[in-house]
Length: 72
Image 1 (tube, rainbow, N blue to C red):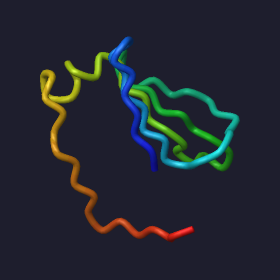
Image 2 (cartoon, rainbow, N blue to C red):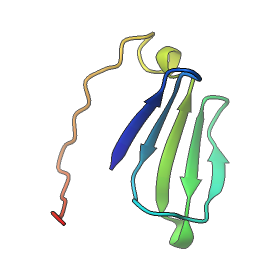
Image 3 (cartoon, helix red, strand yellow):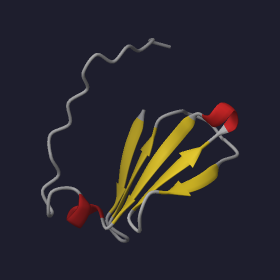
Protein backbone atom coordinates (compact mmCIF):
# COMPACT_ATOMS: atom_id res chain seq x y z
CA UNK A 1 0.00 0.00 0.00
CA UNK A 2 1.20 3.50 -0.80
CA UNK A 3 -0.35 6.76 0.41
CA UNK A 4 0.59 9.95 -1.42
CA UNK A 5 -0.43 13.58 -0.99
CA UNK A 6 -0.38 16.27 -3.68
CA UNK A 7 -0.38 19.62 -1.89
CA UNK A 8 -0.89 21.62 -5.12
CA UNK A 9 -4.37 20.11 -5.61
CA UNK A 10 -4.94 19.04 -1.97
CA UNK A 11 -5.55 15.39 -2.87
CA UNK A 12 -4.65 12.11 -1.19
CA UNK A 13 -4.35 8.87 -3.14
CA UNK A 14 -4.25 5.52 -1.37
CA UNK A 15 -2.92 2.85 -3.73
CA UNK A 16 -3.87 -0.55 -2.37
CA UNK A 17 -2.55 -2.76 -5.20
CA UNK A 18 0.77 -2.01 -6.93
CA UNK A 19 1.21 -2.00 -10.70
CA UNK A 20 -0.79 -0.72 -13.65
CA UNK A 21 -4.50 -1.50 -13.72
CA UNK A 22 -7.45 -0.85 -16.00
CA UNK A 23 -9.95 0.68 -13.60
CA UNK A 24 -13.42 2.09 -13.50
CA UNK A 25 -14.14 4.92 -11.10
CA UNK A 26 -16.96 4.78 -8.59
CA UNK A 27 -17.69 8.21 -7.06
CA UNK A 28 -18.99 8.06 -3.49
CA UNK A 29 -19.43 11.84 -3.36
CA UNK A 30 -17.75 15.00 -4.72
CA UNK A 31 -14.59 14.35 -2.70
CA UNK A 32 -14.12 10.56 -2.61
CA UNK A 33 -13.70 8.15 -5.53
CA UNK A 34 -12.88 4.45 -5.62
CA UNK A 35 -10.84 2.86 -8.41
CA UNK A 36 -12.16 -0.63 -9.09
CA UNK A 37 -10.01 -3.04 -11.10
CA UNK A 38 -10.31 -6.49 -12.65
CA UNK A 39 -12.30 -8.94 -10.56
CA UNK A 40 -13.99 -6.04 -8.77
CA UNK A 41 -10.89 -5.51 -6.60
CA UNK A 42 -10.45 -2.14 -4.93
CA UNK A 43 -7.22 -0.77 -6.40
CA UNK A 44 -7.16 2.72 -4.92
CA UNK A 45 -9.00 5.52 -3.15
CA UNK A 46 -8.80 9.20 -4.14
CA UNK A 47 -9.71 11.94 -1.67
CA UNK A 48 -10.09 15.48 -3.02
CA UNK A 49 -10.13 18.52 -0.70
CA UNK A 50 -8.13 16.28 1.61
CA UNK A 51 -7.49 18.84 4.35
CA UNK A 52 -11.21 19.49 4.68
CA UNK A 53 -12.22 15.82 4.45
CA UNK A 54 -9.50 14.53 6.77
CA UNK A 55 -10.22 16.27 10.07
CA UNK A 56 -10.31 19.92 9.05
CA UNK A 57 -6.65 20.17 8.08
CA UNK A 58 -5.30 17.84 10.75
CA UNK A 59 -4.42 14.50 9.22
CA UNK A 60 -5.52 11.93 11.81
CA UNK A 61 -3.48 9.02 13.08
CA UNK A 62 -3.92 5.91 10.98
CA UNK A 63 -4.48 2.59 12.71
CA UNK A 64 -4.07 -0.60 10.71
CA UNK A 65 -5.77 -3.29 12.72
CA UNK A 66 -5.56 -7.00 11.94
CA UNK A 67 -3.76 -6.47 8.61
CA UNK A 68 -1.84 -9.38 7.14
CA UNK A 69 0.96 -8.72 4.69
CA UNK A 70 3.64 -10.60 2.82
CA UNK A 71 7.21 -9.39 2.55
CA UNK A 72 8.57 -9.43 -1.00
